[in-house]
Length: 151
Image 1 (cartoon, one colour):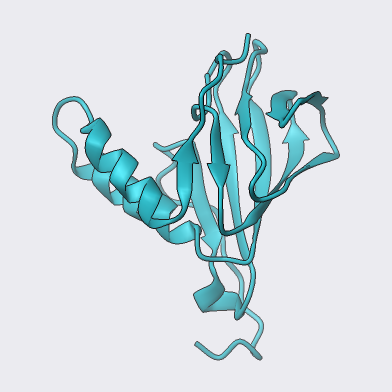
Image 2: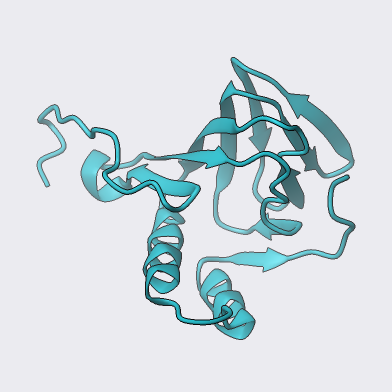
C-alpha cells in the first residue's frame, strides 16, 4: 500500500468482538492502532508480558483498572497508560459501565495476533482450544505471567 496517500478507516460493520484492529503497519508503514469496547465487569486478558512491543492505552470513556508491574492505575477518560515491553500487565473493566479504549503498539506487528484471534473465534463451534491460543500468543512473543486476576 502507498503510505504517502491519506486514507480513512470508518466504523466496523460488525462489532461482535470487543477488540478490533483499526489500522496496522501494512496501511501506515509503521503504526498500529486498535480500539476496544469492554463490557461492564469484563475481566480482560490474563496477566501477560509482551517481549516485542510497548503498548499504550488511551481511555475514551469509562474507567479501566490496569496493573503494570507493581503499579495499579484507575485510568479514566482522556487518560493514557504506558505498558512497556518486558513488564507484566493485566487490565479489566471492574466498573458497571462500558469502557472504550484506543490502543497503540510500537513497533507494530501484534495486530496480526488480534486478526488471527478474531478469525479463530468467528469460526469457533464449542469452547476455545487453550493450547492453540497459547501457541498463537507465543508466536507473537506474548506469554502468560503468574498473578491474581484484578478485583
